[in-house]
Image 1: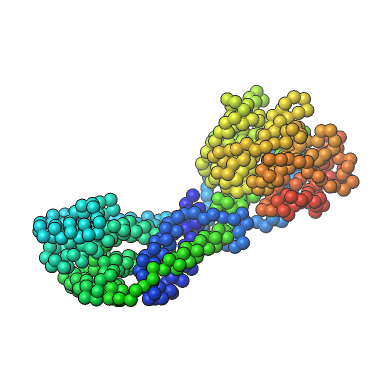
Image 2: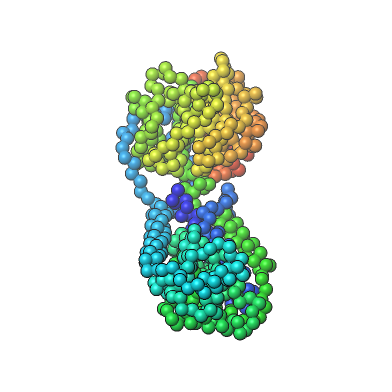
Length: 609
């Protein structure tokens, strides 16, 4: 989860940096022709976007940043052929001794934890500084006593339509007049020796901040800096935004006023600056500021030229932000477990013509079961081992809980196990999910599901997965049910099935994406292969037309579970004759399984051919 958030914020930060650079370049032009209101809202929109940790994504993004992990499709398939495509080899061998799971964090994971640490330290430092300063200010504060100042406050509040009473305290600890507080802001004054005119300017300025909730705006900027502390452009944006907050406030106070009024307003600011050393205080407003910012503020205050609101320019910036969101969606950091990125290849299981569970594709991950039925999993050819909470039946007396009744999908990014006797009523189907190579497990139930014999499960990415479960419905007949998830296995929805077209025992199943799926059946009335497929998420099913050389006509053909890596796929077909396994041949596809052709390059044949 932390890694996913980090990559999301990283992509957002990089793409919006282009917008920030453009706005910084255009700032002199914007200040010359447009009011400060435009910049105020532009920086706020960028702030909100930088806070939102999401990117919609395309299935096949045109821009992919490849991290040093992953395998080519040919390597994956050739490994499968050379290591474990003798389909009559049982999946279970010797029990694997379980132990602690040892994880070697990737570079992206290390960077993610550094990012979290930096964000926590940043926000922690500023919040502690703020609360310590506020505590000191309150400790040395006293209520405002002068009645004439109270009267002026009521007069200005009425003019500005502020109906809420704002507390006013005098404290020598504040460097200049400022508002502090999120829920109930308080106005702090360093002393009460202001002239009537100075006090009016101060009150108008701070009440404008109050009406616009600028303290909340500054809090958002602080959070943005914490989340994007690694990006200096975001820091620069935050500084510019704070400056525009003050300039927009000044512009509001002096709007429609003459030059004399504006000069007196500037004089009041100068007077405050001279009487106390200015100091930047996080999460507060300031009547005065630093020398550089004051130069810009005075220039804006004394500029009598009527400026445009810039509605068109604002809409243009909104469009640019939208374009960057699309750019982020077109960018994928591969080689890591983002939710919609392709998974690392998983070990895939199927059933031979005799009904024995076999390995179709060995990704270096496996499961084993000890004599008591306790199931463990291993990854990276046994380098990492972990215990599951699942215990299967070894006696053959508990329906739906045997090894042959349980479906497995084992990838480093996603491990899924489907098990149980599901009668469609009281007994649900159970799904075990691990996203961290067996370190932790979640158990989800599919209420109302059916299936107690052969089960298959797989995922096309970390969110989208499928289950096919079957159950005998009499001699030579089996009903099969298809389920799909889009939230990582938490909830499942039943899809349509081909039971009305063909209802026999399954040998294999697989989906290339959420729409296209395949069910392979054991040969029965003819030599096969019998494959039914859907390309509309189970709404309709039809028999897959398979063209094979005539030399294979003499063999019974059992389609096993298809293997997919992106759009490319292999469909293994087990050949047998007179009850003996002869070998395995393959169909190949380059378009998610829409078209299949026989590929002799992957044939694994014995001497019987």
